[in-house]
Length: 374
Image (tube, rainbow, N blue to C red):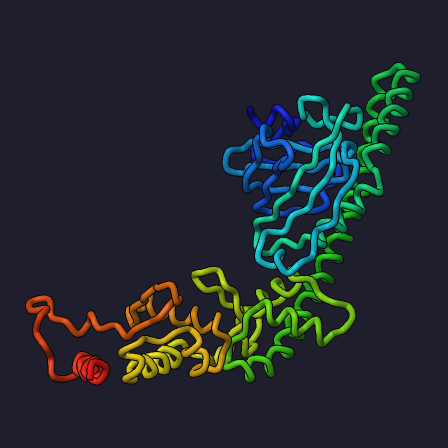
């Protein structure tokens, strides 16, 4: 089933812009958006498109393939606010809207026999679900599409009464002129609102940067993002921030000369790290630990590395995996968990792998093994 089977199409100009209805005004743009009907898997989802909120519709545009569909705001029964939870910090923000539809699932403009819930998935990392939901709710309350429908019927009546081409031209010019003024005024307000939002976001980013200095010093230069979330909200007591606000503020640190940075490991774990926290220094301390006699025999665990580095075991494990990816350590997985050993394969010569060396790590390993067997 094609997407057009449940969402009406949008006409596009030659440049790929949507053709707007008379009086329709664009209010908000968000990229990397999915639309899906989770309760009805037979309706095909729309993936990674540009979502435009207007005064009349939600437009979804695939800028690559040049096709588009829309959801009439007149069909929206209810908009559910984004969920706030610890889990939502690590997933794409979602907003669900309930819209009217016919028995086949096709979206209608308020005269359907049933309804369907459409999930708006914001896969763009900089998308603000709270801001989008607030703007959507504001547009839904204004019900601009109903005003335009009434105005259109009045214009048609006036045209019929006048019965002349001159009257038709006069009425249409008036409607276009008013719509143009309203659109220009709306764009001015949106520009001002965006500037204020950016200013507050920058201020919040600098306040998170100041807060994490002390926790970073106490935790060895690195702390899990989820721990920062808990510590920050505990310190505030009231006016708690959402996980999305924290993540967005941390992402803005790249714009400023702050001593901390947001880092994401290959496993997906996100941490806040001091810029003075050097990976090379951490690797040196790990290798030094791994070369001790007991470690040569038994290896080191994430808990062992955590004690040496002064950080949480979960973060120590990420450092060990990172050192393994650099070829510094080798991993052994057993029912007892992960254990890491210094990489001895670099000590072997390809021409004679059975050659026993009397120096370097190989000799230290032989000595440790001999003591163990004795």
